Image (cartoon, rainbow over all chains, first blue to last red; front, side):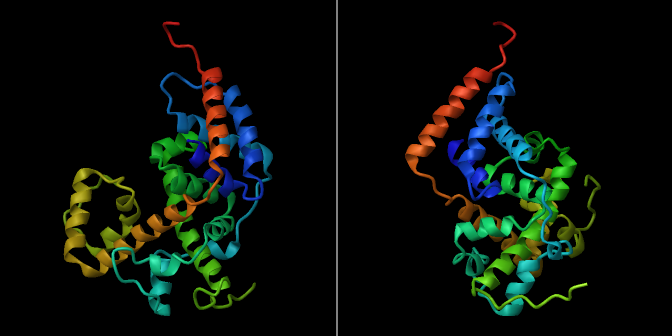
Length: 174
Length: 92
């Protein structure tokens, strides 16, 4: 639990994950754990509450809003990135540092970043994520699917900025 | 989501790809999608790629290291908070 909690705190507050964990510990002691409740679900819920209580809500990168399905697949194919083997996304993502994946996640609007962080780190079911995030299951599902699409575009942006892919085409500003 | 699929097409498969990746479909729907993926090379490539993106992102994020002494301390604090915060059971 500690390892995943640290990873989750690092995604939500990359500059100071420890302080978020300290606030979460206080919140966890305040919110009673029902007998038999999964320790991960109980502590991650406290962590998310601590994050919401201490961070101002922030918008994401608006360029991610209209990300189509299969964004990385289409971009990788068009750019000639190797997509062979059992792990075809490794050709694009293996050279990205973990901190750059966190940077890509940070470009998502709050509600998508929270769901995606729980999904990728927590190994939780939709129902468990619903308890952790205090959303209905349908909201978790919809935000996760959309958030994953947005994250693909953010990963492509970050890879381009790091010189790992051709730079993304300039998008017209309104 | 529970609508019966009489014939699984590329479009049907595409709409269910996220739920399939997360194993959120009914066993019948899972079997239909699996059967389509075995027949359709294009959908199968897309599925393998999407699943690979998820695996790679998970792999990266799990490499966000913290010193083991720090993790031990956090673990101890979580256990203590869990004991302190435990609601008394019906028999206690």
